[in-house]
Length: 274
Image (cartoon, rainbow, N blue to C red; front, side):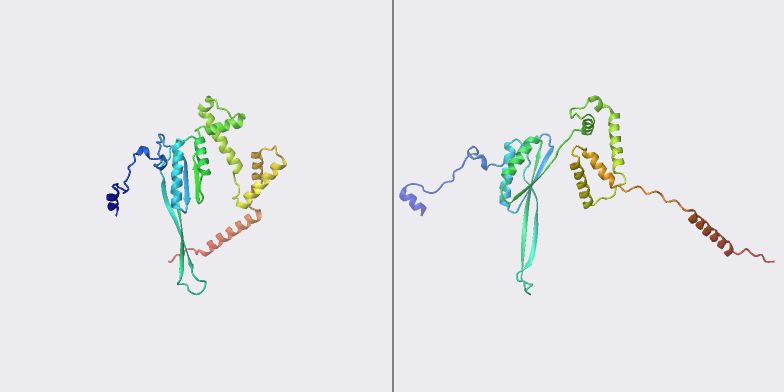
């Protein structure tokens, strides 16, 4: 039919395929760009869950493009094992047990790993992604923070001097100072938490309520000292060692003497034959 119309009209009315160059394609339809991570230091891992696979894959593309536009090195979409759960119920509440129905729920999971990113930029990306998350998708992320090796010395210096500034390099370079800090920390833990009972959930909640009550009574008190006092109050008092009484020791000695006498009488002396 199309050929007859072509001959009558003198025009080819059939649709021809148009090939577009890659430059003419809208960047929205391109695959997200994966930026290189020179150091490869992981700073965040984001897990996504959903029951709808097509919506989850579309949102993963959105997150990757947002990361690429913000200059965040992000891995490709990692497919995690799906969780399949089934329920079998009766069709009728009566005696027809052979008639059953099976229902299932499939939970699809995806993973993104962020590397070599500034914490502030990462927080902005997470806020933007969380703000535009569609319905039916759950997101959970884990942040990895790195601290310098001298963080313990910095905390000790800030507690002793009250100045959160930098530490003197001489104190940092002296090994005796570091050993002294470690010894004091171990001694403090041993004297504070030695011989403490094993607490349950109810006991811990009661301790927390006691600490809150004391802080309300005296707002200017030191929270560490108040907590230590409440914890030490629950420590059981040391039990003195029981000394053996004179009557028990005398009875024990008499029993040993009776046992020795019975052992002597039970053994008969050897006899000699002429």
